[in-house]
Image 1 (cartoon, rainbow, N blue to C red):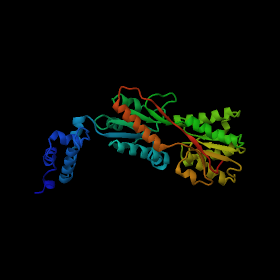
Image 2: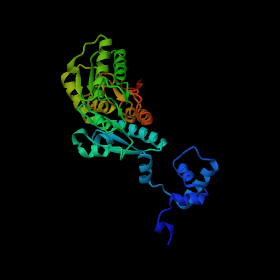
Image 3: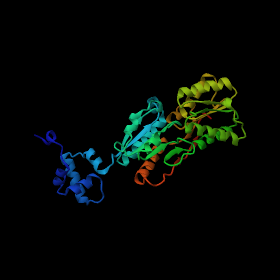
Image 4: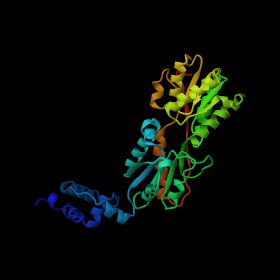
Amino acid sequence: MSRTARTRPTLEEVAAAAGVGRGTASRVINGSAQVSERARQAVEDAIAELGYVPNPAARTLKTQRTDAVALVIAESEERVFGEPFFAGVIRGIGTALSQARLQLVLLLAHTAQRGGQLDDYLTRQHVDGVLLLSLHDDDTLPERIRARGLPVVLGGRATEHQQGAFVDADNAMGARLAVDHLVARGRSRIATIAGPADMVVGRTRHQGYLDGLRAAGLAADASLVEHGDFSLDSGEAAMHQLLARRPDLDAVFAANDLMAAGALHVLREAGRAVPGDVSVVGFDDAPLAASTHPPLTTVHQSPDLMGREMVALLLDSMAHPDAPATPRLLETRLVVRASS
């Protein structure tokens, strides 16, 4: 009977085939630097010859680590798979975890749909740390996870004054750059399609818009404000409302590119020339920004970089659990295209 049919090779058999002790073979398999190059090569050759696969359950019991990290996104599947921002963050996280030889566990859990099952999974028996993305104000998940002794890093912030382990774009400054640009183009009736009011990202981008108006000596006007949920449909609906209420508006800052694309569609249907009649600026610099009609001026942020920085901060927290975490705020910049 062949070995494959009988049983899988053991660590002892790998050590014997390599002519080294069990401890040396174990150190090679676990990536230790305290092994000679000759011994390492012998063990790696034996692993390849025998088809040895480490037992993850036994390794977890020995090291008290799972080598897995959970990414929890508090949004619906439709948003996660429909918006380029999430794809970019996941790509950055996946790349950084792969480089660290850690496994990514992706969990989609809209706040309203969450129950005890998710809480039961997020323990040290399953993952070594947790990354959280797209939290809303009423979400208590970070505190519940920390209470179990797991390190947690947030993508974005749960509150405006949050400290500690989070990575965020400088949303207020990005929005301010957008308004400054529109003012410099001679626009004075600048509307905004703001993000959700129950998310820090929505409120901080709206605050940046208000800061830009104030710096230009323009009064804030509630009739020039509509909120969306970052979807294209909500951008279209908000633009319809703004045009009905303020047909004299001459610029729109949308809090993300999807809502800006929706606004462009409605303006085109209404016969408004962009940028001749109305200038439009978005936020994200998502791939679609270069292919809208006309191409969209937008605030650039890097979701990929956010994902990689989230992992770096989590690895720091895992290596130094008692050290205070330093939040990381990522730079934003304006990319000017034909829409303004």
